[in-house]
Image 1 (cartoon, helix red, strand yellow):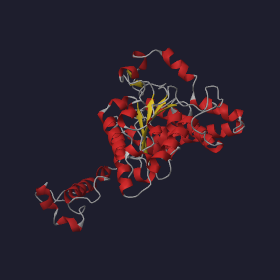
Image 2: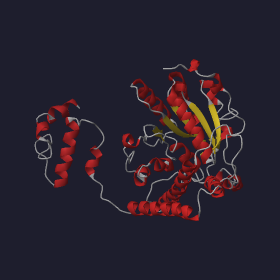
Image 3: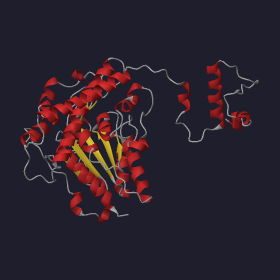
Image 4: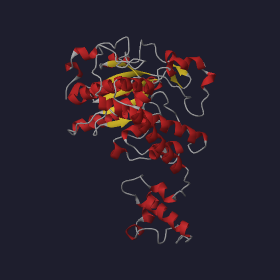
Length: 393
């Protein structure tokens, strides 16, 4: 495993004063960009994923207002970060999202309803992390960062070619978990890319009150890894920069911190009141930098999409929104036995006894014996040891 001291010094240069940008605000290409632009097919995929993702986000917000979701943290306006990062991952790579990164999970191919399961309060995760190579959504800030470092470090020791993308907000960089993850990632040369979506606000705390560093990307140098700034409303640039950082990580050149400059247009969650801590005028310049409008203008100008293609993308978003709406409107009776699912790989006798007791109660059958040993619900191979296991517990 290559040590950080052996890396090219050029990778440890200070981040540029201006964020990397490939497409300007009017949809024109930026000449002399330091990274190559994605190919036309990738640009079209980015636009499609943003259009569909935004429609999903708008639908999820409506469901939260209707009481179908307990809470919803929108990523409206941050689609370039959500999609640009997720689509840069290889199939074997892992995504480590936060609670705000539902659109990135949808772009990664996770069932939209399963994505919203956490926000319904039903499960800690509604999808299979291993199947999708997506960790469970992280609610405590920055805890996903250390998990990503540990997973990739273990994968490298097993000879697996795996990299990870960690999504985090500017507020997460003020947490101790983030600093521990940065330090261990650099020390262990872990193949991790930390994508900081700097949307200017950690709930009601602006970035200027969180950090005295010139930029959040500058912090990378202190840990011994490169820091890069990118225009977080330029999907082409986000994808190109993340793709390059992931490639460097897979080649053994270690982790990178990428700061994507964007803005949180919606409230922190549907229960937030942003007018209490920021002026509405502050968001207007950012609305003019809409990532979907920017990429649409480029693809239209270069003949890569037409009205029919754009209409098809919009229609796909409407179909997905309708499916999510219909499925979340179904009130399924909860299965009490689901309390015992996904707790242990091998069910202990005591837990099996509790599950069997529950089954008996659901059938209306009284428990047998003075200590409440279950009847028919307990598997035969466990009946003899249930009493002893109970005493041990």
